[in-house]
Image (cartoon, rainbow, N blue to C red; front, side, top):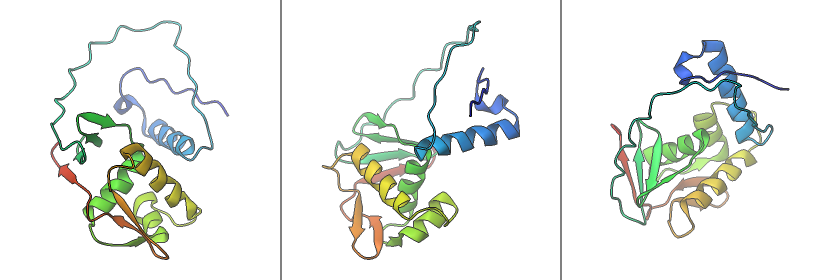
Length: 161
C-alpha cells in the first residue's frame, strides 16, 4: 500500500484522520511491518529558518537526562534517537522505580493493549538498551517475572523541558 500525506509544515496542519493515519503508519514501521520511502515534491517551498536548537544540558556522561515536554533523551551531551514506544517505555520505568513489571503489564501500560506478542516488549527493551549503551545500567531483567529500572540507573527527568 502506498500512502501520500503532504507534510508541508508541521503535523498540526494535518486533519485528525490524516494524523491518525500517520500515527498508524509510524507504528507499522516501528514493528518492522512497513517501510518508509519518500520523494521530494516537484516544487519545493522555501521554509523559514528553523529555530536554534535548545541548549543541551551538561549531564553525567554515564547517565540519562530526559526532557519530558519535548520527549527527548540526552546521554552526556548527545541526544538519543528514541522511537515513540521506546521513549514511553523508558518513561514508564523511570516513573515507577523499583517496581517490577511483567511483559503483559508493560504491554497494557505502554502499548495500550494486550493482544500483541509478549516478545514485542523484549525487542523494545533490547533496542532501548542498545541505544543507551551497555556501559550504562538502565533496565534490570527479573528472570521469570519481567523488567524494572536498574537501581544503579542515573536518570534525571526535566518535566518542563
